[in-house]
Length: 240
Length: 216
Ligand SMILES: Nc1ncnc2c1ncn2[C@@H]1O[C@H](COP(=O)(O)OP(=O)(O)OP(=O)(O)O)[C@@H](O)[C@H]1O
Ligand SMILES: [Mg+2]
Image (tube, rainbow over all chains, first blue to last red; front, side):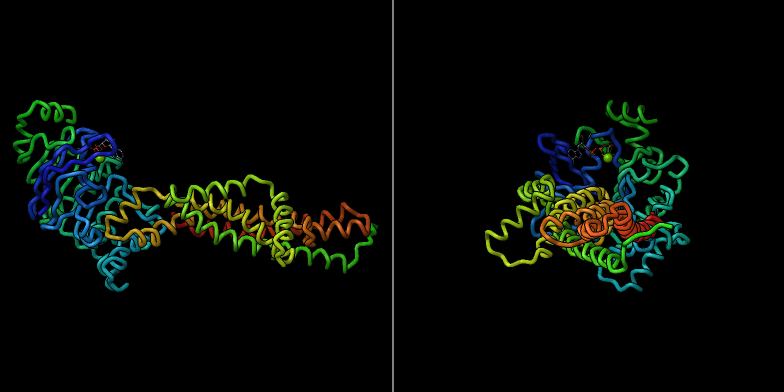
């Protein structure tokens, strides 16, 4: 379970997150939608400690993420994150990209790590690309590799930050299918997305972000089909 | 029929000079690269703490090498160090190339996208694992062409050590020219030797680069 409590986060004088409360239950898929600059990416980075917070608390399975005593590298093993830019490690093959963390972080042997990596790459449909370097892959394939790389750590949570917005339209589908597959497998996920239809289909709940706050939250039916707040209505109109 | 008074022993003398040039280049680059990697990492990863270091290296980069040779040589006499001219040559050239290598390493490290490093950390890699498995290999590929340029220019800069009494390739050719009075021929031969050395170095470098590029 991810529990976000009254979190505030600033970059210098700019307060980006202004007291967010959000709980994500085990097995739940929560989508975050909202305008540019509303703090969606920042919140995801705070969840796995890539960004510090000024006040409030974030707990993952009861562990305080921003506590000095927390072993953040250990905690990150169970939180996979996939970014908008696919961030391949260009000097490593697709297989090595996926094997790196299982070997160096989990201490698996080469053979074990390779088995895990090959499984995950098959899972995302890249089984025939394991020997190539990521620079030769399409954007959609690189993004699926990034998903496999995160999954190879057997995370309990997956966070997606606009995983499809840097992709050509014809490549979006393959990545969304991969995410949908994870949702069907019961993975606990937080999806920051601009794909409203997709959010409606896969999410248990949708949160509309505005000015660093959760402005409206509920089931997809409530928030996307029958939004109550005027700002939500305006946002949905602007993206559809 | 062209006749020349260039003898076999003159040619060997030139080749010996070339060997001195190569040795100077090698030791200077060894020193310059090791120091450049250490300093470059400091400059990239701790920019504030290492700022004074940056100023010092700036001085070495901006003062003409000839002045550095002469200054260091006099300093040596003043302090009373019993170092050979060859050692002085290696150290001055090494420090000079370290100043350039530092900048190359620093910009190589900074060219590794922050987003890629974040992705690495998000997988649970520690700060030092991120440096070792992601930043160093990526930065090496980025910095390599610049480093190769430093090798080639250091090789040519070794010619300046003649001012502190070392007989390397250029000084050797001057000596031969003075004796046989055929500057054109001798300098062409010397130039050819420099050219061949550079060619070999850049070919080896290019081969390494294409091997990396096949990956991208
Ligand atoms: N490292 C940073 N330093 C300073 N300001 C930042 C930094 N990262 C983000 N910001 C600012 O914080 C605000 C929120 O950014 P964030 O990326 O979280 O928004 P977002 O909701 O993800 O927007 P988008 O939909 O465009 O991705 C923006 O105003 C942004 O300029
Ligand atoms: Mg964002």
